[in-house]
Image 1 (spheres, rainbow, N blue to C red):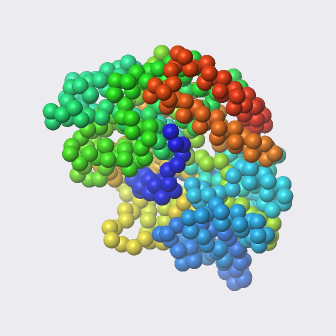
Image 2: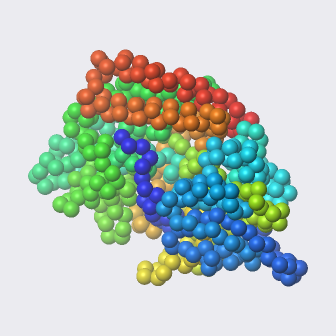
Image 3: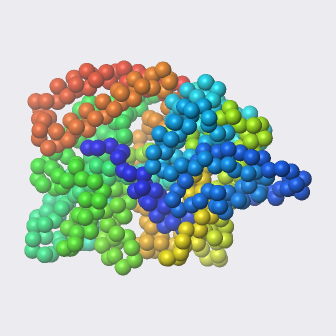
Length: 559
């Protein structure tokens, strides 16, 4: 039951694939307007000496920041000259920490959120030390697009605002719709059709379908080689427990936290959790869940979905089916796997929901080494990346190279949304364009932005993969609890960070290990449940909830 251990490379590949598959498009909003902040430098600016800016940056292997076209675009547009301190993704966190500890740090850090960035604890610590500069006044004076975005979206404001009201850095605000409901289930609908079965709607329906997959030879090879249900232990919704548990009690697949009438609570010591474990154990005992789902990585999971001897997988857990089956053109297996709606169980029909890709912390900060000119220039640059043009040039590549304006008849991903941007597919064999900042350029991608990317309508064409995921996610939308604990917006007191981290790790590990033991029979739900609950108490669960409650009560999202 290893937690979030997927490698950075897998994440980047998946993220890049999805962005490309999205045929990404952008929508005009109050902040994301195509023309905002796009005026050319004045003649006076052009003649002035460029503002030299030192920046610590993480570089993707596919780009060269010094020769990058978006780098040159920013330098020309804002009359600047970057002096990059470039590091690779490997060891990024350690190199950032060494940079700060040395005292010889640059004027700014521009990072890639899913590789490494400043944590909330880092921001509070270095902000109070004066190493990081608050951005509030700069945003008020020089960043109208950032300001409008925060006024329009309180979630964004709470995401970047510390409890003291200061904004010590800006993060990657990406509202990926299909990512926001990660724990989906994909079932082999060709097998359903062959066995004359309907799409399951309840937990008991699902059990009966898995039983039929196991016993009735749906792949028709005369062998009992079918794997009714499988998953993995890594990331992207591949763990099987949350989807199944959500018919009993809400499982956030992260910290096992619930929010009830504003009070933070744990889910994994409730009677409903025990019922859910009993149901999952019943599936396991009948051989309906692949034992490997609790031990294998994504590569092993995909070997089941892409079994060389023929199709053997009945249902797979995952944010999207490409995790366990190839979606390339010509792969007929891909279209066989379609989404199952959240199952109705004894206590409801819930779906795991998270921030859709929001990673707490900041990827952009200014240090006390930054000159006033550098501060103003950098905040204007980031403000530009809060416009449609700026964000797309930064994240996707330059217009005319990696994206273009839509043609007549092309449609946006979101229903009823005006299409604004169409991706230009890369040509096989061509070198990288080196035209954008890749993950380092992701700053502001609200749902309406992503919904406005051009996307074809054939969901089984790999070029239109994002629409397939979007349509599947509509089945899950609205099934989340009315109250969700916003871990991404919680700023824990730096004095309590280490304590909270230790408690969190111990409690999560204990819940996960015990859940697996109950499911596999190494612990007995009747005899050992009380001792398990007592074990949670012994791990200072009450103290952990107390710390989180205090952080939640002071969170900007509540103000």
